[in-house]
Length: 274
Length: 273
Ligand SMILES: Nc1ncnc2c1ncn2[C@@H]1O[C@H](COP(=O)(O)OP(=O)(O)OP(=O)(O)O)[C@@H](O)[C@H]1O
Ligand SMILES: [Mg+2]
Image 1 (cartoon, rainbow over the protein chains, first blue to last red):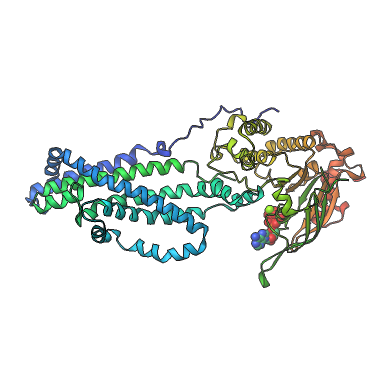
Image 2: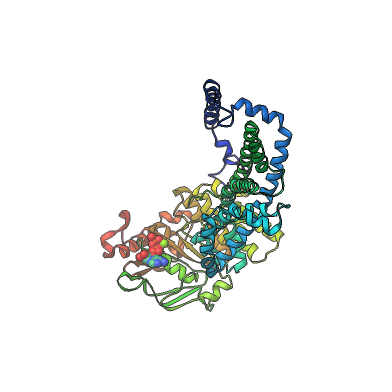
């Protein structure tokens, strides 16, 4: 048979992230705002003689960052490790739980109040309790706190994703007389995948926050949270802020990585026309 | 004589209860012989999709009986007696074109070599060989629909159920796909139940055209395109679209659709007998 309509050159079908669509202005604008804000901050601190315990100048914070770069990186890796392990555990629990709840309605109904409760209470509040359960010498409590924080948004998003299966896809699988596991594998899970990663993106920042704040309540030293409290306690405010900056960068790192993963997994999920 | 591909007897389908009740199908009797091409035509909401879904066992009738190749609709579905193409292409967006076409083969345990061979064959058939590795969101609506048709043909079913498969296509692609479908049916000898809104399409493709009307959905008449020498030997070559018999059949379907006497609506100035 002859192909008439599609002599168009074979399209570039390599998978691509929609990142290429981002325009320069969208990156540049916030950068400009950031730089201006820093300049204003510096000027404000200098011209009004603001005390460092109220607000240290950006230059002072930067000085501490360069001086303590090693310690900040080490702290970030400790906190980041807790957050990462927590994220992985939380994701497994969230996805697994959602798959169970999606399959068995009664489990969903049973879990709903617990999930709602966990979604509103700050889970870091559990940290002191967990420290006493697992001992204050290990990171277990922090990992659990991070994991729990992650599992809730992942659970909720996954559950939502599992319910997005289109009627025509369900009909198709029925027409193929596909078994329940085939349906889950071929349609339900792929439909839910972008939702899982949306949940993970939302959760990733929570994981860092949870792992960090959990350190405020005790446990082994070395993490960013502990360093922030101890520098603040010794009145070294610029140093405390330097650690805070490290925490911000760590949170951003988690966010960007999970965002890229999310974009990758949803690259073909724009609903196809027709 | 073989079992008919589809046999529907006294089929009713009622949706909802009480005042919101909709009689989608009322007392439908229809037989589609093995290898026969039958079109369903009628205004929107007259129950064409509903009837197709009943045959496919995607929905159950309120009363009446449907058999497919002598089996219950349910057994026929389990035995994979039919291939189906929906009004929407229903492709899986996360699978490539090739991945979509091979899906039924994969689900039914066909081995990888055989799948690859068959997919290549089907891609060739629908003219999308260059797009095997594309994803559905990279194709036009018409191309997606062609992938869906290839998928329906994947297991060379003896019965094809098609719900307005060409609705989204432009006129040129549509005619090409119609010719392809005619050729495929001739080659495979598959029976087809084909839903459409286009009278010429129904007449060109079909051995018989079933005309339906809504509220309640029922069959108002059946035009046998092969009969009365309307189209001699039901020639479906592209030239058949210009034959006199073609227009006579079109006129007959049209008058059934509008419920007016046949002579009042002679199609496009073509003489009636
Ligand atoms: N699942 C359902 N629940 C309730 N009513 C339904 C359902 N499916 C169809 N109907 C009703 O049954 C009637 C027939 O619908 P159907 O989809 O079969 O029409 P159709 O002939 O395919 O129309 P179209 O040409 O627009 O596709 C309509 O009035 C519709 O509202
Ligand atoms: Mg329909």
